[in-house]
Length: 624
Image 1 (tube, rainbow, N blue to C red):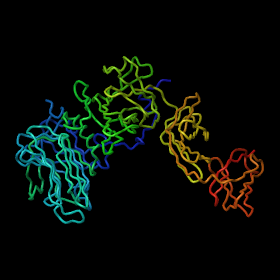
Image 2 (image 1 turned 120 degrees about the vertical axis):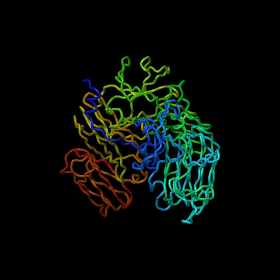
Image 3 (image 1 turned 180 degrees about the horizontal axis):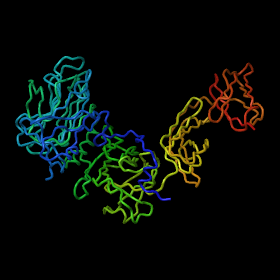
């Protein structure tokens, strides 16, 4: 039977991915800490040259937009001539243009102190770089943070002048670097204050360090105003306050990012590479992505990455806002990076005409730039944006000769190891750096679509739970266990539902689990012999309880069994079915033995679990 994409999508109910990805800019953290993100993509739907009223927040605090009204609004710049790599920006006239941001507990009106902060700004200076001009500010005349231009320099300032509590007061302090007029820049700044006033303040401009200070205390709540492009209320500079609305910026702002945590330097470097690639602004240091130019196909878009700096700080899991997530590098060392981006082709499926096992593949391609060798990685593909179900047979197509054509060669990486309703994972893969790759699939509907798999270790047994989203011609499930994740033993067999398009939950108890480390999976088999498996789950169990000696006889038995201990023992024996249902209990008597009747039980396999002063032990019982 042949299925179309539309039919396949209609057959299955889609859930959100079960994985928690790092979906912040460049894959650096997620909405929990990335609270504000103003992107130029949001400006594309508005008319170039028009006054702009509200910049929607793509970070975790969704309602926190940057806004203004009347003649104080900045205007939209198309930048089709090449500034900011063609992305739009907002132009501030240096007279009265500003964007306000409402006070927020994520930024300035928190309870107590919020002293871990990270900022990123993409901006362009105007012709005047002498007059004081505020690009960003939060707070007022006694506490706050600001980024501003003055006397040919860019400054990053912070201060807490009042004696709020521990870690305060501390004076205005700043870092600076010289700048040029009419020039595009990437600014990143970090604050990591502490109560001993030895906290970090650091910043960079286009990858060049503006310096580091270790004299920062705690930054307490600083209501007043938050703004882009001017002081909207009050602020403080060097050694004096400045009240009112003033210090208007003459220039352009293209992107603003704020975290309510201090990102580490590895994350900061990857974030700067994302902004550098996106806006075509060169970094003077730590530029680890070289595939964003014309010669390499302009792989500029939705860059994300993993890596590690020499101090050991690292990022090992990233997705960003694209559909690819890489994680679990198996050989990541210091000063190694694995960074990817795409060519901005549409996420549309196109028909394959000369690939033997692929029916369709994406127009969009990705490339990886690797510094060092991080080893093999896992690739997770988010299918939510692709109008397709995870029940298909997916492959990775590689354009090995790098000529932009996938169908003149057949370099295809094997299918995913794990499937869920809206995500697939290719485990332990190695894709060559600088070589285009994309995602393809064939119209193969798998017999079972897994939606959940979980293994729980209990005192007496291991419980295996799984849920299917749908089943087609499904005969049975085989629960398997291994001591090394290579050699598998069948633990239990469970009948499948045959055909089902609604979720079904299953569970099995392993009453004789292995001591130490063991691995579990569930393998499905349909009526034709086709099968697929869940991912592998690891269980750790104590190695002690099952080492004491007991005798169980007769076994097999038709009538009764006796459990005898050669040592004094106190406790009870619990007779259970294979599903874990308790059938009867009996306590050890004065002679350290227990008798259990099997007379009324049907033939089959049972478990006798001894819970005693000597430990816990589970033994198999056969009723004939």
